[in-house]
Image (cartoon, rainbow, N blue to C red; front, side, top):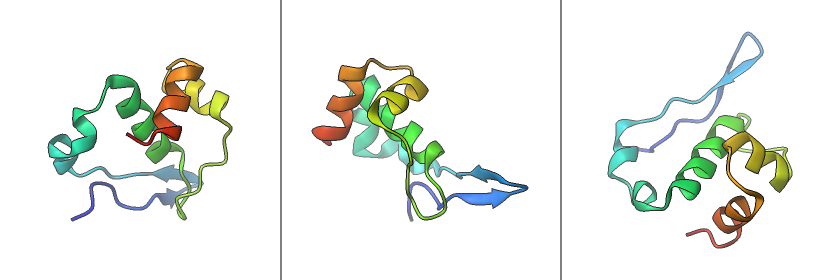
Amino acid sequence: MPMALPAVTVGGMAFVKLHGTILDSSVWSEPSHIRLVWLTLLILCDTEGYVGAAVPGIAHAARVTLQEAEDALVTGR
């Protein structure tokens, strides 16, 4: 079972349903900034999984530093 279902649009707003198994996944063992960026990407993505944001915008949305966002995105830990 996937940890997150694709985004669904309701009344022009996108929603992502998360599955409880996310807490048992390897992602949940990562440092906080990686978990925050990962969840932020799930929240920001459209129904196709596309996130139309630059790294500074993702960092701001996740409330992490630019370096932490770059680390989470580039290293893909």
